[in-house]
Length: 603
Image (cartoon, rainbow, N blue to C red; front, side):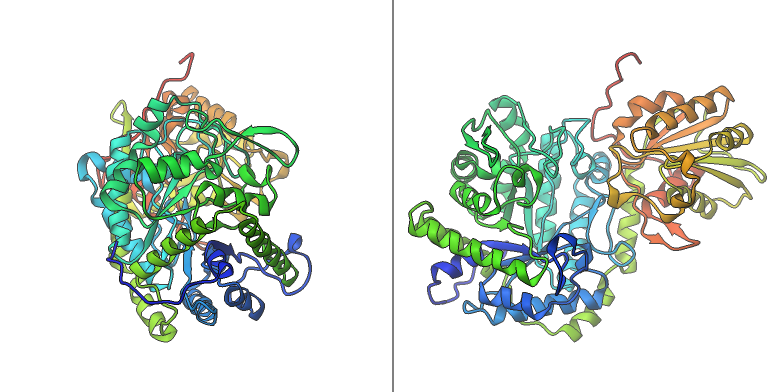
């Protein structure tokens, strides 16, 4: 972190301090109507929201993909946001934050910005490359974010993924080894922060051994205290001591071995406090034991792990009572009418301080940490958007950045199995390859990558697991020389599902996500029955190899399936390009599994 420069500023009022402790999202905004139905992306700052920032001395905002649609638009928006901050009574610049982890979580357009193949792919390169790709990817992302006027990245994710059924972390983790996660996470913090981007380690005290997504529920980690310190907390302890990251994000997770104190939910149910609201976890352990001096930010407070059990005002007060500095996404502001909710929140917080429910000295110390972090990174409300656009166009997604992205994707490809010399594929003119993928866009990406990597004239057919004709799939497999099957586990979220092409499939053959693994298994069994050379590719978390690997002669893991170019006739992404090179023998698979694949019971 850059050294802190003392900047003389007048003492802030209580309202100003509380405003600095709020990080708002303006993902959607409609000038009229109700917030429930507003799905209009906020791409330029309306006057009503500009006044929100300036009138309430808001400390920061978070951007989503809806807010970042092009280089020019994003820079203009960043400029508008900082201009609004400059008109506040405190004159303090905004934290402009984003989730640009790389891989599965990337908010900038993939066809414009360099998105990489994610943390688990970096973990797969560790044995041969050490922390090299962690440093390089963070440096690239930092330079691209800085060029857009963004100054906070909610990354790296340093959760130690110990649970094969983890629905939300999985490939966002570097792996299952706490020491390796510590080293790679520290390298990313250094890469980000030495290039002007404030990091936010997440999710404290650890989200790696959960089977519930805190976006949809409240997970409980039943680890013993010794396990928590040896595994979950270890990367946080290491990185705090080595890198002193600017921010740390809390987890909406119950950790009864650390704090078994309870709260009463809005429905009257007595429950264990989540870490986000635990003073024992945030103040005693994170600040006291681990000696963290930086800014603590909540995970989004609109997530079900919090919003199901607290009103928005209760949630913010409880996080501040725990010792958290910034409440992220405390209320939804979707229309001008919603601004009244913010006014009510601020008044309620002021009342909580005046009635001694919240300690005013702690609020003052918290605001001071926030301001010190802004000073340390020399955040400013001033920049020239015209020059910024010219600069950004030479940086974002440039050839050198894409080259590093491609190198990581290839270095990560892991060969888990190869029998009967199946790989590399010996392709000849006239051969038929049948591809099985979660959706038709991924079929196209795999086909086009193979076509680019091979000089042979090959015919292709495709089975999309979202919808296919079983009789046609049977015939295609029967006549194929090679079957290449890919699977993405855990199930894709709605935002990740492939393409419009699948909507054209006959609805009588459409499969829901629960049916798709069984469909894949039946197609792989069919390939076995017809004695077809078969390659299975784990496209996301490699734990699915335990289920599907025995059906294939060869097994590869890519940890990613990002599609960066998605046009009508052209579909491509770095993972598919790398896979094709390995499949046809242009490159070898040198990655190593960052997690353990345990055989399924009965296998």
